[in-house]
Length: 305
Image (cartoon, rainbow, N blue to C red):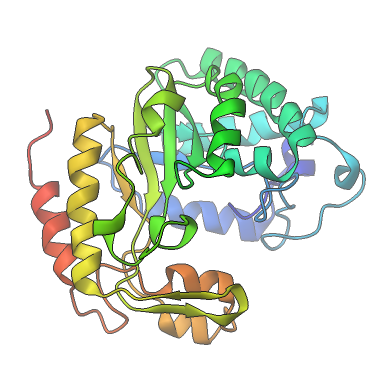
């Protein structure tokens, strides 16, 4: 989720040394004896247009003519499919997410979303022919079930979802939902996660990313002041497992294993967006385990059914 080597992928030329190093590092940290989930994104970080360029560094501005190309442009589809196929060959994933949080584009730019539907149809068709055993995904960023945003997602996403095999879920209810008392999972709407069942249209689902703040989250720039603690984080995880089991979810990814206070105060320059996930680790910033870690490990030790 840091850009695409658009020009190199289109022309079949070498990626930058920096990108190759990133890929190599991720491969080195991918265990051989576990199922693998791989995800890339055609969208930029704001989810309102084409992904940035990954050249000598991630998230570089799009060079010409990529800065004027739409998602359904033939060169965009060809380049993206080429990069995706290369990574699939390298990582041999069981699940490949070809569109992280695609639902956000339907909320941000409906015209561009129409292009994204055509893009998804073309990319998935090509990848399915090349890699018939890989489960293709796109993920949905869930909103409060009764919100106008959720209504838009319900109306627009089925046309895209028909082109994939598994529907991914991105969900952080403590901050991106709008119910009262968001810091306490006891206040979650009854259908906070099960709303995906109607959207998925009978297709299997997986929680591609989730988390819960283990400390009070205060972000003045966004008007956010949410009271939470490690006990509430653990309560959320128990609730998540229970509902995910009723949905027969394929897997669950916890977004951040360890709090990243040092990174946030350093390289991230106290970015308010990054603060949203800063304190969601199953370990705190000093590597002290939180109660939710035991809950996670107990579930992980359960046999697959």
